[in-house]
Image 1 (cartoon, rainbow, N blue to C red):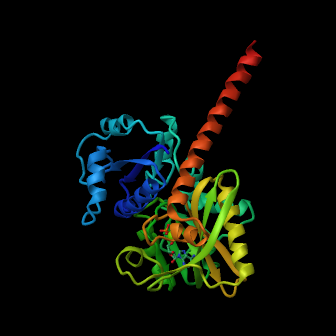
Image 2: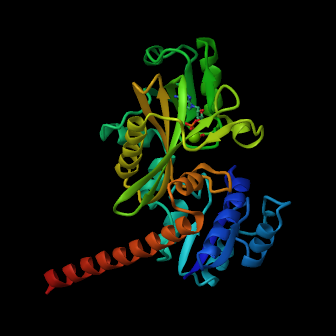
Image 3: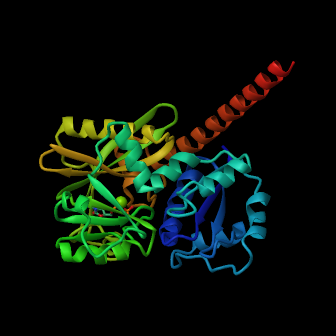
Length: 357
Ligand SMILES: Nc1ncnc2c1ncn2[C@@H]1O[C@H](COP(=O)(O)OP(=O)(O)O)[C@@H](O)[C@H]1O
Ligand SMILES: [Mg+2]
């Protein structure tokens, strides 16, 4: 049993999803016997008092904190005053999932649930993630990079080789913001310009006509994979409206999949998260073409959705790990890692003292 700070909300477009995830995680942590201190981050980046966060989480008719309208730095007092033993960040997207919040918690010497600074930052950057995965021999969708500087009206020859359709997406981001499917060369420049609204680098990828599969990973030095799930988009691809507005996409768990293929996915999910130096949790998303000849890791999400219907908790539930135990495992991993880090840090200091003697 620990005093756990549930950090939620935040400045990204996924604020409301985070609120919904936080409700689920709060229930799970409480069921596992932890004391939960809600620490909300308003859309303007200000931290709010635990009571304000609690009121929002208690009121199902609201899904967003009010902007606090203060300078951000002084509002950190709410985090400092909470006297947490463990932090549980459940903030999706930029400033929550990208290593920056994790860096703040490192500086405060607080154990926290989920991946560390480097793995969070790499997973959030789709180009860096692809480069690292490829270096580990993990299959990624063929791609090219276009930056704001080299954008032209003509189609870059490297892009021609990728064929049609293409997918264009900003290197950082989530919730499919800025992602377009391009079926005609004439539409490529517009899609690139749209992607460049959200980042100064966009990825142009070969479009994979097939299935979207997801696998949950959990662990510390030893990572484990869950059963495999499948997303069936309600439209041409799983875009923002399909994720949050239309309610037509289907989440199937477990996916109907040949046993050997499911096992390959689980191995790749663990290998992918390990390749970026991950621990804690991640949902690894795949694209599968044909009957399995072509299987690619599409992306790694280090702060996956945690709502009642989200794939990450559902896959663990299916794999025999109910939500309270899942949340508790993440708290336990956070504490164990923090102790190990402290031990390693003492080792460095002792070593320096030895050689200085
Ligand atoms: N190369 C691709 N081939 C086919 N579909 C893709 C490809 N890349 C992305 N998609 C579709 O776009 C959606 C969003 O892209 P994704 O890379 O997962 O970005 P996000 O981080 O915004 O979720 C995917 O869930 C999938 O439906
Ligand atoms: Mg995705």
